[in-house]
Length: 228
Image 1 (cartoon, rainbow, N blue to C red):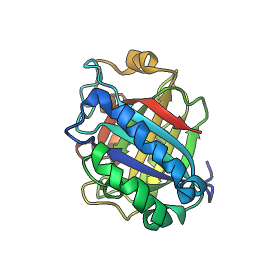
Image 2: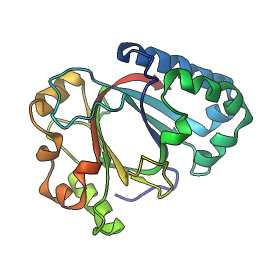
Image 3: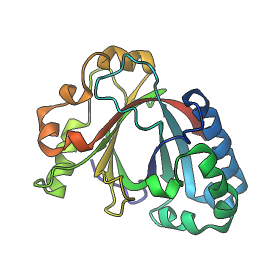
Image 4: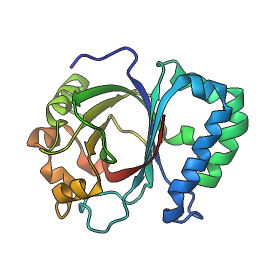
């Protein structure tokens, strides 16, 4: 599928402030997101926000990662917006001071910039399995991207599948090469397909040949907030 010049995202893999209970994280995050309405640059540069919180059900796949609490999928106006937003005076004055209340670090320190490609058309429901994937060192970037395009359509019964190829500049500790989204109608549908087996074992062998699963993150989530 061809890439489009305006298909840019900022994706961050968040840990909550440890003083915040897991059950309270989604509401605190929504409150933080609401501050963006006071920032004209955020309103102009961020086309959509999809906040996804980790499902807390114990019956999820054995390789589901519990170290993180959520994923934010921010669709941007253009590539330049990914850099400009960090120096915006209103964002620095209004949103950044609130970040330590909600997260364990500043958002910039866990945010990735990626080029988005929809590899399987379908509905984006209320649940999404998100994979932050690390490329094996011996695999070329082009071969990695092509393999994921073939693997990403995912499971029968799932909806939209999206491949996000990450830019080389990444925060320390977040060295992922791609983020894949597999969308489902709801958590029950996703659970019926995934519960009781590792996600990595359910993916095509081709995916395993290009990805280092030991350095990757798989997280079943539900959508807790969308804008618009």
